[in-house]
Image 1 (cartoon, protein in one colour):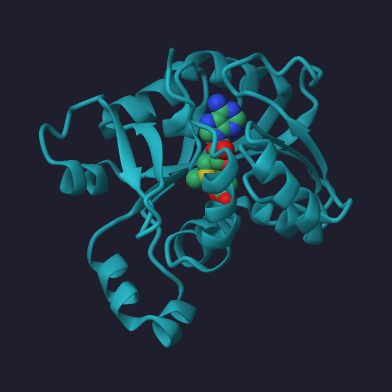
Image 2: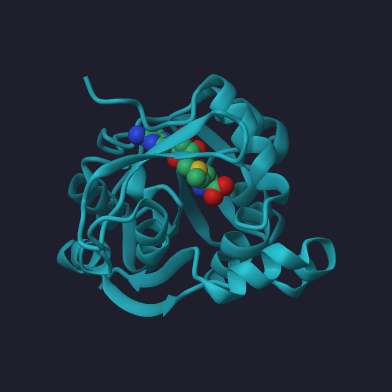
Length: 231
Ligand SMILES: C[S@@+](CC[C@H](N)C(=O)[O-])C[C@H]1O[C@@H](n2cnc3c(N)ncnc32)[C@H](O)[C@@H]1O
């Protein structure tokens, strides 16, 4: 049987705390993705793999109506506490079709640092295309392929599944590394059109609290983020 990829139990609790303040999530990925989202007031947004609800809470605060879906009951509890009724949250395994959602029911989809965890990615992309209205946007962030290459070594072109330890926690996350060609190629093959690609760097706020992390993340990329449109 395949190793689970959702962050259950202790891993979920650890990630919820980590995502709050970590240089990677709080200062690099999230600010960049929220900038890509732009003005979301009045938009219907699907937050795919919503984790502890950091995106759902922020997008709701900016006036969007958000549905968050997540495969870990532990993280869904954290998300519920964070959004405090301001977003709809559902337990959902992303390897399964999005049966709860009607065709063309969302203006935007946020998929932050989840893509690399999914095995049946073409099915998920087909479903995201189905539930997005024509002209709707899809934001996807992922681990930068060169960050994986630096960390795991071997071939840049490898598609192997890896376990990445989280800090000193003795916990690790399980995901598939992939070259840029695969990441972007799959999104384009699913019928999306690329609008913007960025390599997020930390915001200035990080320099004040952790200058070493700020410098490190300005030297070597950690994430890649894209904005695509459904034609
Ligand atoms: C790195 S976290 C990102 C969470 C959130 N998007 C954020 O940026 O704060 C990856 C998330 O994907 C979820 N996940 C991984 N595999 C999943 C699956 N098969 N079904 C649903 N959720 C999954 C994990 O439980 C975790 O919440």
